[in-house]
Amino acid sequence: MEKTLREKIVAKLAKIKVVLAEDEETEVTLEDVKKVDGTLLRVEPALEVGATVQVIGEDAELIDAPDGDHELEDGSVLKVEGGIIVEIIAVEAPAEEEMNEELPEPTPQGLDVAALTADVMNKLNEAIVNKIAGLKFEQTIAELKAENAALKETILDVVTEVEKFAAQEKDKPAKVHRNPFAKQESKLDFSKLLRK
Image (cartoon, rainbow, N blue to C red; front, side, top):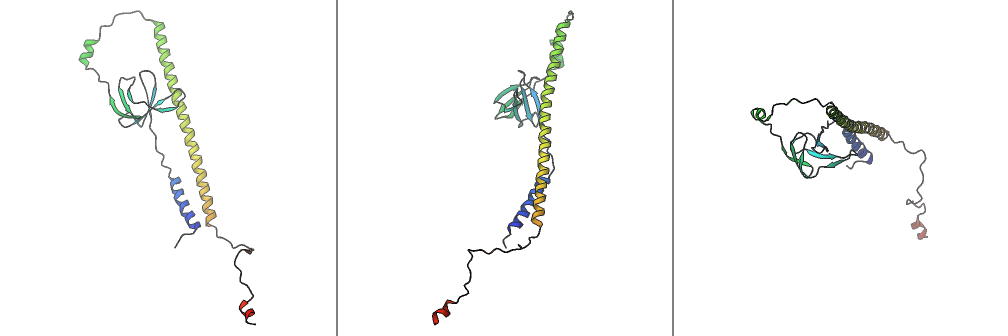
């Protein structure tokens, strides 16, 4: 038995409602790292082999990272192919004995207040700029989540209204219109007319 259009719509609406009702929010984890030249990279989901890497432009536009080696501020190197990390070369920490041997004894120097102040100001400025850049992305993500929630709610409302409409029983029309193109039976019997 073939389903009526109404039954098909009700079945499809039930499936749509199930999909929209799923409120499992997938937590997106992102990690922003800085290259030696100051360029910001966005790594998703974490700094590991197989993660995607994108370059964050000045206008906050994300572009796939070019193929090649990308040296980070901490000294580690990411090898990227097709926007995906294929290898991470970590910085090897020198042994303590080697560090003790290599460090020269500190020489007493005069305290250069101007250089120290400039260095602190530069670091503070850089931290503030990075924080502001992070806030822009968080604000955008929050706006998108709110917009997505509103859209889901609206679609669920529409699905509910259509289900209510489909569940209503149909009343027969009060006035039946005659179809002028329908085949009509003639009240004349032509066979009796020909027998005369």
